[in-house]
Length: 336
Figure 1: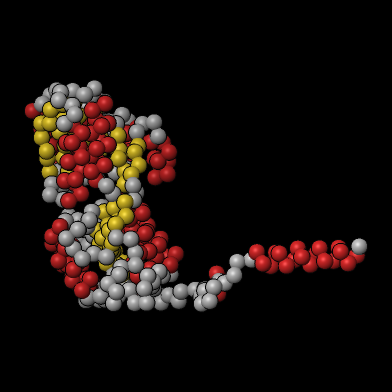
Figure 2: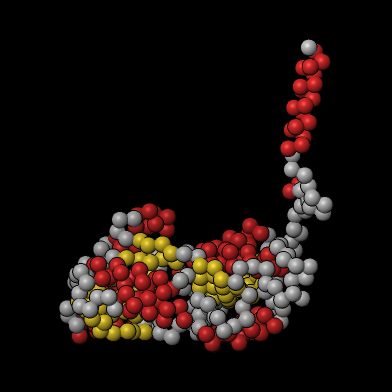
């Protein structure tokens, strides 16, 4: 009986050992994997325009800097203080000469493609975020489906004005992402024959210009039912003019982004919908893509460079969030 019991215990032990996954030849266990040795002087550079814009500072740049602190590398944010695409191009070209570990570039305008190509040709990992520059040689893009931003605004606006009335929209004309957004809006409105679009306007991402355009619209069309905004400063500008005209809540407003000023206008009933981008994801994961390229985190061949392989996703849609009066407190509290 004693012998039988010992045999049983031995059989159990052997079965437990046999169930343990076997390490394949050449396969390192988790504990065997060495930590990546990071040079503290390794520098990743973000290049944008309107570098002091609150939306960029509070979302894009803040996430990029937090990422750098976590990874133990240097991060720098460069670009002109105003919306100046040519100055952004000049900044990119200057940075190329310093040979940073990686470049994270805000895709502000198609005209920056040549500068992006120069960075890639110089052997610098280069990721574009926010708006894609598809004609460039960028290694990856992270951003938002702007057509969907327009579609959401269109569907919401149609409901807010009961499918009829005059509307207008504004943003930065000519930008790839904005134009996609405009198209999403217009495609929805085709289904509402009683909605009349009275204008498309360029507010140049300027609050004062957006307010001026809105005031002129109200003067020219006292019965205007709604206005849609597509850049970060559209909403505050539209809201300012609507409030001054005493038409808060009468003229329906949908727009993008979710800075504290935008959300206070939602809480006050001036703006009915914000469609927000998950901008922190642009730069956090964009920077991580650069890091992974530099450190060859995921090699897909014996030599990815010779095989002409970029070992990171080519395009990433970071998604959207929507804010209305029903849920604004959840976001506003986090921003204050």
